[in-house]
Length: 178
Image 1 (cartoon, rainbow, N blue to C red):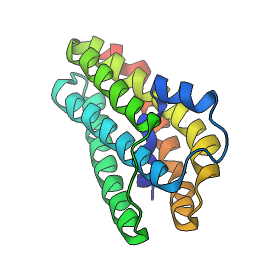
Image 2 (cartoon, rainbow, N blue to C red; image 1 turned 45 degrees about the vertical axis):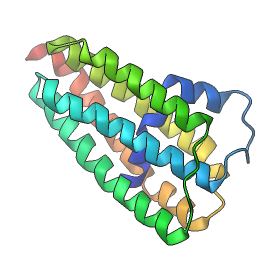
Image 3 (cartoon, rainbow, N blue to C red; image 1 turned 90 degrees about the vertical axis):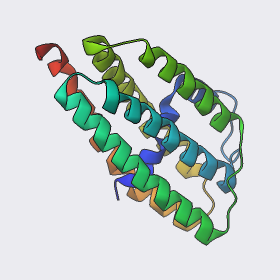
C-alpha cells in the first residue's frame, strides 16, 4: 500500500517541481504521461537508494536506503502491472525527462561524496524530495488522473510518502552522532 506513491518520490526534484508549479494547467497531463512520471520517479529513487546502499556510512542511512530500494522496486512492479492491466502505454514528457536529468545530476553529486557528507546529502535530499512529492501528488498528479483505478492507487499509497519523510526526518539529526 505504501508502495505506489513512493513511485513518485523522485518527483520532488527541482526541475519537476518548477514545471509543476509554473504554467502547467490542471488537465495538462494525461494518464499515459502520469504513468511515465510515476515509473521514472520510482527508477530515479531506486538508483539513488542503490548508491546509498553502497556508500552510506551511518547504519540508519544504510537501512533507509535498503527500504527505499525495496519499496520502490515493489511499487514499480505494481505500477507496471496496473499499466498493463489498463492497457496504457506510458508516454515520455517534459516532466519525466527533467526527472531523468535531475536524477543523473543528483547521482553525480552524491558519487563525489563520502562518509558523513554523503549520508547528510542523501538524507537531506530525501527529505526535500518527499515534501515536494507529497505536494505534487496532491496538487498535480491526483487531480489530473482520469482513470479511477490509477487515481485510487495514488491516493491509497499517499501514506507511504509521509512514512518515508518521517523516517528520513528521524535519521537526519543522528547523522553526526555515529
